Length: 398
Length: 239
Image 1 (cartoon, rainbow over the protein chains, first blue to last red):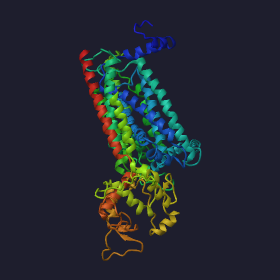
Image 2: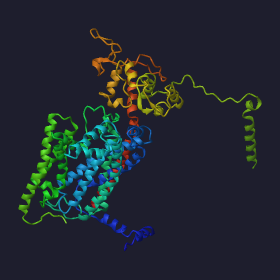
Image 3: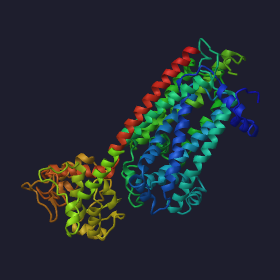
Image 4: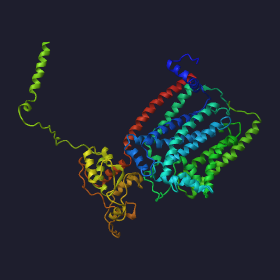
């Protein structure tokens, strides 16, 4: 406590929470390499999560996780709860904004090699959080108990049945009864509500991991490596705020001016287990994996492929052990990552379209690209680069 | 001091003289009744307000709007008494959903040539073709062309999507069937357009508020963004 500007209040806090001042100082002076605008997505995600968390808490005050009342309570939030429509549109629009930022954030990590040593834990905690987000979004989409909620949940939960041997038993155990009903709805609500708090904790873990190793530096592999750092505050703080401002503006345009883009078309019809909608479309952020489930004729195969597509991301730090990070300066990886982004986008479109032969074959092709890039292109490129670089570890950031 | 005294006296005198008629006569006090001047035109109504009148008098005799309560219409019909009256006519209260007039689906079907009148809560969003379809379909009834035979309780509507133009809904709108207080002529296209506006409102009642808040939010963010850009450039220059 050598600080000269300690007002009585902070002095009082300092003696009781001695780590507070070092912590704040660490956050403010955290050395940032010369990162570009893609490094502001984390701040956008934090804000998006905060908005989802707060709006979700307010919605949970009025939502009733009950088979008979769930749909009506959502309608009551829209029509009768003061500003309920506003909070709900922030929550339903926020999920799209959150996933858009999340996928860009992950894409940035892939392109700039942020998953590599020594940042494996940052990558793994982030991927774990992505899985949590996907689960939360899925559980949340079930809650309004509209037609699409019900049938989307039916399709996805019944994918569990494909697990050989224990499939059906597991499904019944998870749903609490033979079919998707009141018990499952209650469980989905608890899952959705609890996961919000769990994600908040994992965000803390993610930031903790990041602050252990520092941000990756996109210039190191380039012709002019720039090893200068500057403290996080005030420059990067203002930059992050600026990015958040732009992010919120896009958020506002989506929520306030283009609400029909969010596509709740069939979800304003109450769930009817006797009437399957014409086509079951998932939300866009889960569409890639829905397309994968559909692309493989066998149910178990589809489930395995969808799971493998996510698991392969977890072993990425060990698949690509090249000293180079930035895909811009790795010709093979640049093409591979470009193809992967195209494949991901194709899978989103395929999931949103009907299961016509064209889209099924396109999603098979995209899946092939997905696995080829991660299992063949990246290790191959890493092997060549390691050979080229010899045993030296050029480009390793401190 | 003299001036003040004079002023007080004057005030007291005026107060005493002001209501001479009331003080002198034994007539009971009657509230002053303001009759509206007849020359003043009635206030213009929004299309969805006229649409609510049509819904109350026409649509709701077959269709339900389960997701909305009678009281929700307060934005379009500011008189609580009128809404209460409407709800009571249908044996309901302000806080009950606008239910179907039919006791069961079977009765509803039997009364409408076999098709149950759909719920109108979100019809503007869920029906194929959306509001444009509703507007054209409501005004789309035509005389039966030669060569077309219609089953009983079936009506010819070339716009309608079901049953090959042999529509089960009775032509709901007729010229001049409603007298709008604002003097709007109750023509069929006018009423079709008004009731569509109402159905859009019923599907998404916060459209205009949403736009207003959105504009305010964007303006605020633009201001904040401008300041942050200025700050960012300043910090960039310093470094």
